[in-house]
Length: 608
Image (cartoon, rainbow, N blue to C red; front, side):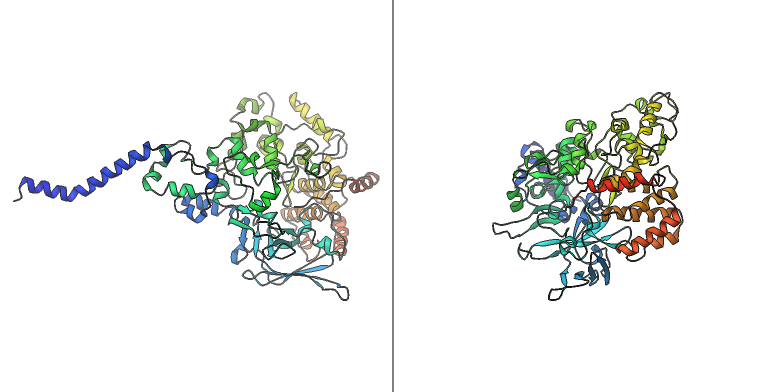
């Protein structure tokens, strides 16, 4: 039988080491809590990138949700499933040139050659291996190494792209707002052959460094292809070092409300600083020192003011050494951006933003939600977001039949207050400038659309103004006033952005107008001088034909070459007129012609 002392010795032998480790952990825990340097901010500009895979070790859930996003696939190596186009020998003929895509998804290759080469000239314009993909949501563009004076690491975005929705190749001229160009002119065909090193690299990658040297050669680097963790949270080496000790990771969530100071957390930032993180890419800007940016990158640190390294482009912005205001065409007359990649400027103009203290990007969007399209927060509802500041009683318009705006649930807040008056990526997009619809302020003007008639496509602006006034008085809105619909005027005589947005408005399923009428109006843009406008017409007709159960017409619109060959296109327009009926304002041919002539006075040349 063991003695009491022997039992004590046995207990110490069994539990002593555990008690020792517990005491050691307790001392470490106390030291970690009391050590302010364990949680204080560090100079994050000195941190270096560690890569998204390193982040996944401690943040698997966030990594998984980001991995499903279109931000991750913004730039990829052009191999395997990253390549959306088949590259199986497809050909696309545009402006007298034939592009042939070959090599399959493992070795994608592009060749561009003249259809009718002149004697003694090289018929081949491009013959390149595809190295990178750019984008994966609406359309995918491709990048190749091409030394055009910038050295062996100079990369160029190629002149053809794969459209995801329609599963077909398009020429990049069709995506940007410029006229089609002259047949056989290489300069027109290659108009949007853009250098990746000092263009696409900035907003489509993490911590880009163009690496332009004094001789004009590029040695570009990125911390990671695509928009990865450190694009929004900043370089993470200091964070990884600080969190290396398990006890520190254990306490990180409770020891400091603002995080551990070694990494940026956009969700904990003010609306202004959060918008700065997004605005680095979603707000075209002018660098404080362009030469330095082209050499070393912009140096932006998430959580710091974006204004430290650049200023956002506005309607009246100027560039040193250039005359006038070169960015006017990118904004509506009231300063609202009318192109995508200016969401940052639009938000800053919104009264709800409250100079950075109110509504911010994170109120609607999240990089870590379940749905990659639009990246809206789970369960997002605009009425809930708006209801944080606007009392439900003020939104319901008590005493007015039909609720706020008399639209009920058919139209959400953004339908009227963030209308689709922005063009980008071959889409009509909602504006990020929150405004009150006031069509009465635009009566007599032809230079800016309004929210009401972008939905009520068969009504005039005067009708919209009268309807709003009637609703305010609790009266029944008036019927049609017999004046020309605003969308018809924009479709026939607006500038290219107005024509694109009018075609998009006619395509939207919620437009309260007979689809066949809208289809007949869309035929009017199939012979437009701008390929992007024609594209909206073709795609709109296909979408409406599909929705209306018209498979023969849908197939006719998808026939090879019908969008690109002028002869085939003219024949199709005649057939569609016979089938669908007259176009917009057909009862007033003189006005139709005057509007058509007006197009030549409002030309726009906007690319990337």
